[in-house]
Length: 214
Image: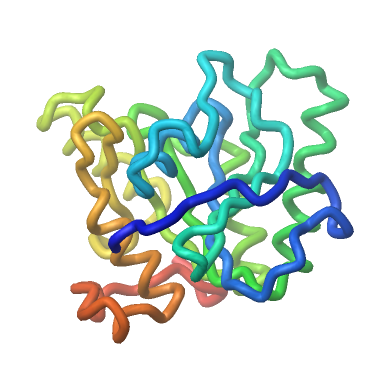
């Protein structure tokens, strides 16, 4: 994917604040310290399109970004950070659920999981909700550079067993080394139906998690 333009559109907390666009959307979700902002910046070759922070839990809105005037990336609020007030944490679930269940242009979601962590209750609940809605999704194991190759292999094996994943249902990603960037774009292009425009995505035999499940 050649990135010609990438710009912030708006932030929202409820449907009447969502942008009025007919462009297809790809959403990104994960824990508040999983590296969503850095991953999106790496995908679009921008340093500060999505503002990053050293403090997990700073993204408390749904943020929309228009890419190449063709589609929209949606950065959903992170979840699971204990230092955020409980009242705010309780608002995030309904906010995200409302977006997922009402946005007609949503084509799929990238579910981010820190490769060093074991999937928790929140991850399982999110995936169950995506299954319920029939929204295609793909796992991205972030911060792959934080582990040696041997430890990375061992942890991937553990996560795959926990989530019952096949080889074609996840990608290891590093914003530092850019590992997994091209494969992630292949999956995004496939969700958006852009393979014919951008050439073969190299992923025509890969499967997505859908309502039929893992």
